[in-house]
Length: 204
Length: 204
DNA sequence: GTCTATACAGAGATAGAC
DNA sequence: GTCTATCTCTGTATAGAC
Image 1: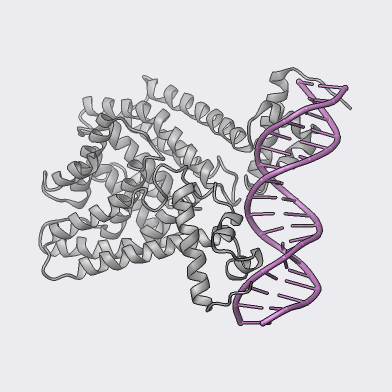
Image 2 (image 1 turned 90 degrees about the vertical axis):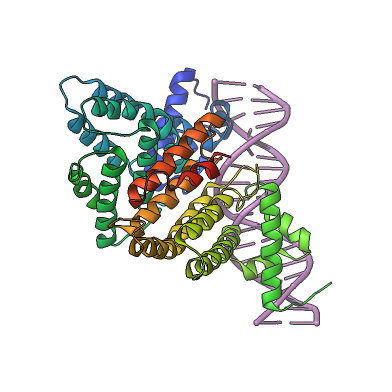
């Protein structure tokens, strides 16, 4: 039974199926054979389009990051939003992708998360830094290292509040959320209490 | 040819050999059979002592962390060292284990690094926090969240300056080092410039 | 309790025929 | 482009020797 499809359709079909399985069963527990039998192709066909299982993961990660970057770019360029509103939305987006990229509750994949964080910093860093700079010109923030501070914040939020990394108790998590908000204020040079909403947001 | 050894000797032998191979060839490229033939034991023997290749990695990581923790505990309890001297030594230790745990230049293992960071935060966090508290009583530092701030700093230093995570140019690295020193001062409430040596240290 | 030998299932990946 | 056959490697399982 030999079904020929256009290259784009095939690539897309593999990607969609893999993504669904990764998010449902977890990356490690999804086998190549799972993907193959879900779309009824042979192993050779899979490896004709992707060099490895890992490459499929990369493609999925990049696609997600691209979508998130576009969203944050749109936000940061919106003239009708205040700096605070932008910061709020950006942090919400960052928080909500905590584990969403990986699949909820599934034993997540360290390599996938490593790549995710790397791309996140590389792509989102400059965009968020531009919002910080806007805050600087408005006198809300004061820092000599907007870009670098943003990178630090992304790294902290994605690691410290990543459930597969640390399993805090409710109280521990609340304390970390408060400490993070306080740290944000310190290193962005923002007024004390101006990021109280961040502590709220991250506690849950 | 049947060689009987004491359980501890055998466990240690497997551990040492695995560590050497992991650091030489990289974790992924080291096969169980590599380990077996290096010490001439049967596969059954390996699995008699360790449940999996990953469990061996865990044991290696834990042993390294234990050594590092002991060293930092010794430092932090030394009555003849100033807080600044302690901070210097601690940061040096943290920096020098950047990739040393993994093996230089080898394609590192994300899972191994994830575990390393988790254990590092869990074990070193409280010890370093005690040094921060000493600094607080001496009026050098001021923070409401010593423990949490230490966790943030460990995470930042281990991720941002991890070569397998980001490949900064020399200038980028220098800027990140300065930004990190500045962030340390902010969130620890230390005097400006007091962590200039950190910027120096991390630039290389 | 400790160790060898070996066979085998299941995973990722490759080669080459069609 | 697609498929089948095959390879390597991890990990399980077993039977048995000391």
